[in-house]
Amino acid sequence: MLKKMGAVGLSLAIVFMLGCGKDEAATSSSAVEVQQKFTWRLVTTWPKNFPGLGSAPENFAKAVTEMSAGRLTVKVYGANELVPAMEVFDTVARGAAEMGHGAAYYWKGKSPASQFFTAVPFGLNAQEMNGWLHYGGGLDLWRDLYSDFNLIPFAGGSTGVQMAGWFNKEINSVADLKGLKMRIPGLAGEVLQRLGGIPVTLPGGELFTALQTGSIDATEWVGPYNDLTFGLHKAAKYYYYPGWHEPGAMLEFIVNKDAWNSLPKDLQAIVSYATRAMNQDMLDEYTARNNAALKELVETHGVQVKQLPEEVLVALKQASDEVIAEVIAKDDNAKTVYESFKAFRDDVMPYTAISEKAFIDARE
Ligand code: CA
Image 1 (cartoon, rainbow, N blue to C red):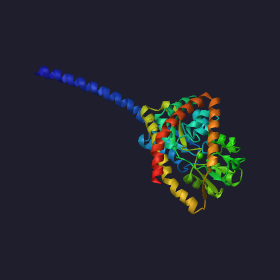
Image 2 (image 1 turned 180 degrees about the horizontal axis):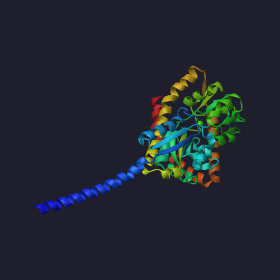
Image 3 (image 1 turned 90 degrees about the horizontal axis):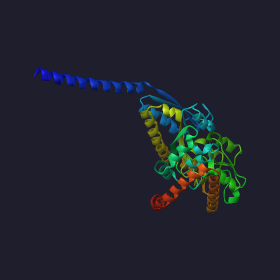
Image 4 (image 1 turned 180 degrees about the vertical axis):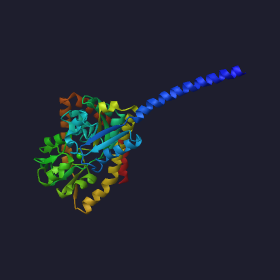
């Protein structure tokens, strides 16, 4: 009896010791990770705290700090606080900041293929763009492309369909685009050029002054919510729709690959899911905030909201097809990315027509 009890006691003791050893090992390894704290710098192409575009990195930083219980702290820098807007990509690539928030089409000089991850004229709306990136292979292609730059991209929010922009004169025909100096980045800028316009790329913070002083004749920016903030209605009279050029402009978070690899798996998961949450959150913010801003622009500031004539849209569409054909003929990466994009667009259009479009038509 005693002997038996002794044996049981011994095996219980062994189990207990083994259990302790295992627990101790697990506890001490996670304790090291829990104690290790990371502070990241996040540089953006937007003015600090700019509504919508600038809310996403701020909300991301807050979410990450909360979810990691302070193990990963992210400090957000607006344009020109640490580096100018157009240096965000290079800064994160070389690791002088761990993260960035901006738009891939600003980096077309690095790779023409990057443009397809922000906006393609007459391309995908926000919902479709998210579908392509997350369930249609788009994000994998984006990551392949940025891998050469030591960067990992994440979808970073969508504005939804934008406005065609602010013009200091009426656009009644294609001829009115000739000689028009307009801030319009990415593929759309090349489309404007094909129709005789002069595209320029400027960061958002410079648009009001450029338009007011007449150094540009027109600018696109985002939509009522953001355009009102910049006061663009004080610099131009005519506000045109639809945003043919940016039907679902997608922003980006970029992470330096070495910084990413230095994070434990759970913090990587927090960063990854936080970007995904902010990606949707931005669209929610625009969907809620554009409406009152449009009302204020029209009712308080007397802005003239106008639709681009059919003839102009048809010409823009044709020029877009030509520009895209040229871009992909010159660059293999652009060709690969666009083939995937186009296949998704061809696939998604018939169902969008009998779902979202048919419903919106019926509702009206
Ligand atoms: Ca825009």
